[in-house]
Length: 109
Image (cartoon, rainbow, N blue to C red; front, side, top):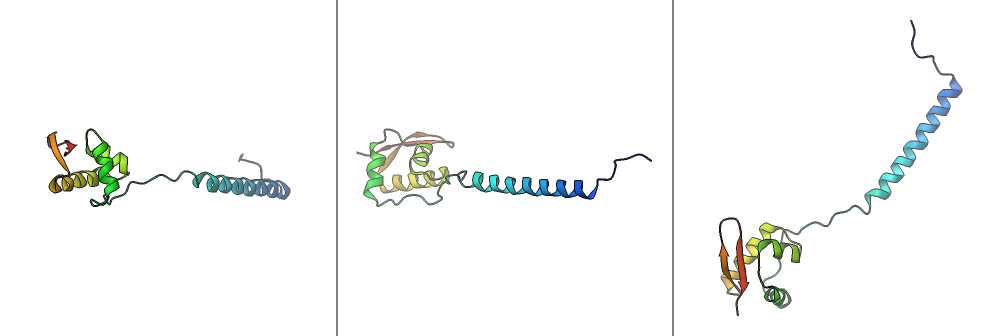
């Protein structure tokens, strides 16, 4: 028999106006917060093998690992592995050591 008392029309109107204002503020905050939170995505495509600048930068590095190349050129690790294998086939770098998990390369002289 009990329960919550029914609100008057004026009270319901005030509650609705307050809820609408809160929703507008919430949407405003979502829009402003969403803009700067864009992440930098890694590229799937490996850099060009014929680019002198990229090859020169690789020769400056002491040790070439997939992680080092991926972080330097902002590409995925799988793309960096393929890129290093292509460089090895072309004779630009040579394999120093490695196993099935990681391979370590060094620039050829």
